[in-house]
Amino acid sequence: MPDELEAGFRGASRVAGLRGASREMSSGGDSRAESCTDLLFGYVLVSRRGCHLCEDAEQALKAASLPYHWRDVDADPDLRGYTFRVPVLLHGGKVVLEGWITHDKLMRALNRIEEC
Image 1 (tube, rainbow, N blue to C red):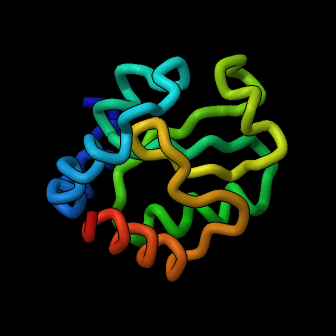
Image 2: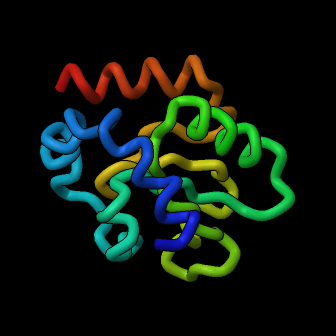
């Protein structure tokens, strides 16, 4: 198994309880921006290279041990709508957080998802 996939699975137990909530939240989402890998990880970080806010968001996701799939907004035409919004964290095709994503903001958002 490649290191990138293995790292993503390490945090899977942390979010196992969130999968039920994601089904409720994903109804009506834009499925065009979802790939098979996105569905595997559940969370997608729409980002771009050289973006300091995007790098901060990645650090917050790693600190929370949250598995996610990184998508390049500049390389994927399906993500064009997020061009000026990165970083954007998606779950089930819905925006969870965008802009300045800190560990505290991420944990509050995850707690809201768990409450659904």
